[in-house]
Image 1 (tube, rainbow, N blue to C red):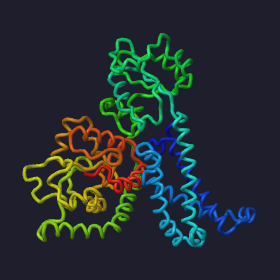
Image 2: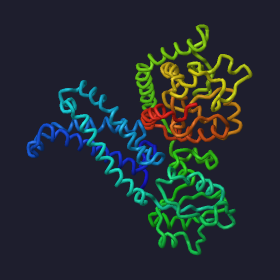
Image 3: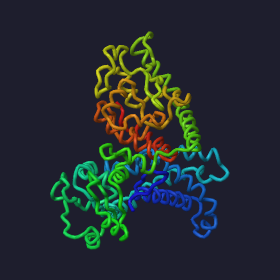
Image 4: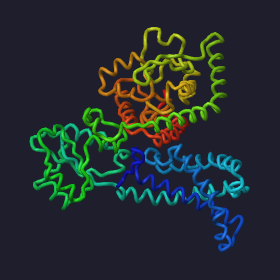
Length: 470
């Protein structure tokens, strides 16, 4: 199995394993450093190992947390092994003062973390160990070791969408597509070299050509499915999965063209509880306060910079009406990043290299400082820390008429950051908005405190590497 599902969020199994391996390697590197620095005798070291383990696990845990925040375990696919290791170096450097801070909070049982030189040496050992083991691990993953063999039943529009949208290494890291089996009288829209003309039944075919899953992606089920054949395949141990659910799992987004209201009603997800509501609100407040503390000096410097560029009479903040929970309109506040009369001719999409953006505005938009005043929207409850980004009423009205299920975004509070911000670039047109909606629906469908925490942690990567900002 190439995915595990934690609290309804799909996580690619090889990277879970790689994260655990990194954790153990870092703990080992820390223990090795302490052994050479303070012990030297193996028997004496093993007798005192129980006193060392808390420090080793805190060191490994801190480093793993920062690596997740910097996207270490995903960068391989985009930037290669070198990008992965460069981010690891950055994570190890950032983790050293964090470990030192942990020592100050609990000095009695983290003595070894506070020992002079241990953190730096352990980080160097850990870096080389992870480099060696990752090379071996990635070579193994590259040989399809963790991938499932998948057969698609159907060769029409839905099947073509799966083939086209899930064709990159990023989307196919969990499966190998064996081919498409068309139904009788079904129009074939996938390329001929991908079509499997099976003269026998599906069951007989999979006995000779084993697969892990059969994805049902037919355009019109009313014309009939080979239910007996599918049942026989299921009895052989093959998993049968709906095309829309398969698309969601592999891409971490919802296929708007494939889903129906019936699928939304009967599929897993869209469930919340009062306990989750309390937990989410607590997480919102904690995250907002945590961001506000280091954000206040930045906000002050931003206000000064805006005044210097545009004059003492120029406004610092820019307020806009946005659509929030259940379609209610509220005011969101941002640092002004455009000229004062930017919308004298009416509301328009922000675009790349927008001429209306000031020099200060260009910088604060790139590093997301312009969004910091929205912390107060989170604290007053009109926004959450994590959720779909709020849109303006005039655009909501237009998009709701053109894009199916767009209004479902307002089933949850809008957020300061969100799943779509992590996975997709800035949306400045209808098609980009449609793509971002796919990610927003995935979040709404699978929201949990775990997913919120992952989004908050990985937002650090978005800010540091300037992803999605415009």
